[in-house]
Length: 252
Ligand code: HPA
Image (cartoon, rainbow, N blue to C red):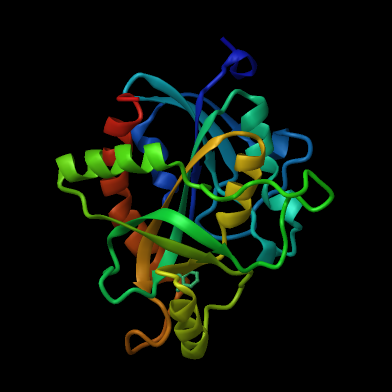
């Protein structure tokens, strides 16, 4: 059966260092973004740039391995093209993952945070030009959050819930910016996800989001911050989220 006729109800977007998650899947087909008209290619290390159709616990999912970011010079429409494509191919529930810095002293690096809400601080939106005034009062579905929290607890996986601040990047934040973000109510900070979540909601897709807390945000800890640390921590923590998803997705 060719992938064109597959209709996965679940979608998964894999962020920095989390691409190895597809090793947990029973892969049916793999389609490079380069073979799809209108799909931009990522230029960032750790982002492969392909769709993978496969099964998790017997349930068909469509994983986007790699995304493009505003800081690659892309528009809000371009960074959400994969979400529209997934919607066209049947996705009704979308799990977004990312690597993020933690600005909550109680959320240690190496653990996961489920997004309860977000701050879109990118100053843009994939919905510019319409549809206008879309409701965003529950971007991350309450029912999915409850389900994932229950499964994580059963498995003994630490899963915080908090607010993700999405910034354009590409540089990491200054300590003053991190203090500002904490004042605004952010628990984690990153450079992706919020525009994808907005696009998905506008398409009527149920969304769940997970931040791999790869490092203390600037100023919360001594020392410099680097992409290598982000990738390495992501790779180690990926197995924890994989266990949660492998049990939670088939159970719904
Ligand atoms: N800030 C922004 N984006 C990030 C970080 C961070 O500290 N870590 C991983 N992605």
